[in-house]
View 1: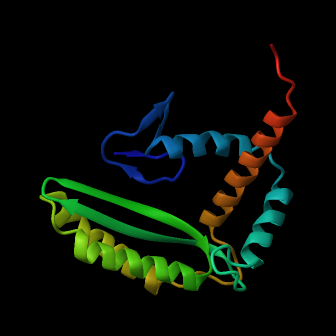
View 2: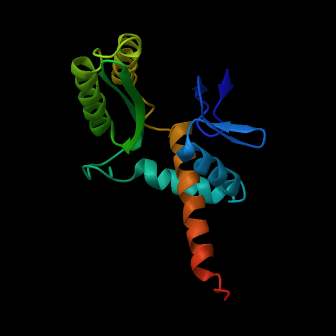
View 3: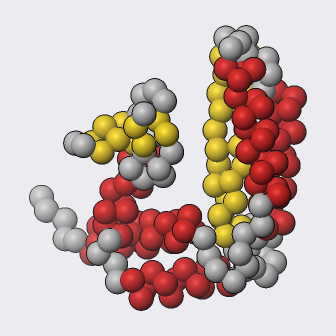
Length: 170
């Protein structure tokens, strides 16, 4: 099985190919490009921004941190159609737990109704939400996922600055 070059998740079917790299979807493909750009940003700049985000206020509720990446997982099904996704939330632990609980209840009530994937993926995503609720991130050290989010944001900012300063050619 292939692994996404941006998020390192296993790709079961489909995805986006770019040379030798393979990505889950278009968003991961864009993030893969941004990660390549982010490699040019000095590590000291990344670490400085990473600690500012980690020790800053929660972007969702404005409470004090630590701020980190908390993932929630959901499934929605209807007969032969099943959709599942995982969503990263950059927020405090309390906001992360709310998202995980909300997606767990959503999945519990709306995930089972598709055959066969609803019956397969609903318990998987429920277990992933429960595991996320039980796992306590280290409040003193940002996670590698948060570091990756910060790198991508810095790269996106650098690219947007570069595009706004480039002269237009006619």
